[in-house]
Every structure is written in C-alpha cells, then in structure tokens.
Amino acid sequence: MNGGPDIVKKLMPMASREMIEPMLAKTDMMKYGGDLIQAACKHGKHDILELLIERGADALNPPEFITGDDTYRKTPFLL
Image 1 (cartoon, rainbow, N blue to C red):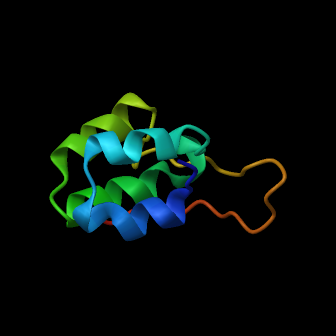
Image 2 (spheres, rainbow, N blue to C red):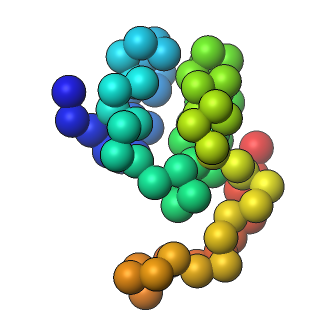
C-alpha cells in the first residue's frame, strides 16, 4: 500500500501500527517525522509513536533546511 505523510495523518485516528508501517516506507522522517509524532500523540496512538521513533522521527531536532525543498522552514512542534 502506498501512502504519504498526509494520508498517514488522516488515517491516524483509526490506524494500527501494522496498517501504517508499510505506508512509512518512503516517508522522509527528517521532514515529516515531527508532524506524524504530533498526530500520533493527539490520537493516543502509542504503538504508532514507537514505530515513528524507531524509524528516526525526532520532534526535537527538525532540520534547518531540506535540499530541494525551498518551502521547508524549521519550526518547533507543539505536543
């Protein structure tokens, strides 16, 4: 199953770790990890939160910039 960060966030309220895991295969955790962590926390998805952290998501250290994405800006995540 293909997916992306927007689809994962939409599915978060009803998702399970097994459902989300294949959808994260091509997701850039440096770029989208903080947003996904925030969504998992909001919906009480502890199993998905663990998966995101295992995959390298880090809400405390967003990158300063991302090569090839001029619209990206470093912002803090509110949990």
